[in-house]
Length: 203
Image (cartoon, rainbow, N blue to C red):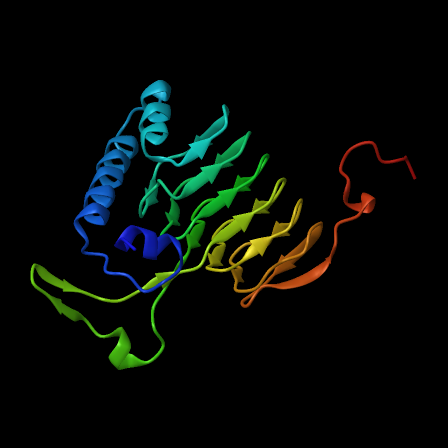
């Protein structure tokens, strides 16, 4: 397997591999250009993200700033919106559904490092040094809202139409249709019709 294939498959891999290094340089340059673009350069922003993402539907929008590890491992659905300072570390696949919203300062973090210190130590390589890592995929289903400052760890799926409260750290799967909060993030309750802001009967 190539180092890229190992990476996407969730195996330990060498991030100094030339193919992976080139991919990171490409997405970093695109992010620099995106983050330094002007508010009226919407087509330029769209084109820059289109050039690095694995896939996306027609309507999606990121406020600057945004950072990806690779970009090419991230798939984005229809009507996606991300507020300021999104970080998507897409070493493993990141799948984002339709009608998903990110608040500011959301981090999607697929990478994982070994827990034992000597396995996590910097390794020598002919062209430099690196640390071993692997990654676990993240799936964010349709209709999810990640509020301000949410961190989603690798291996997590967040179910359809759920809301993750501000500052939460999501370490385990979240079912659909719930409000979940905290560090670590836990289900608070189901979302019901009593939560509607519109079309309520007058009391």
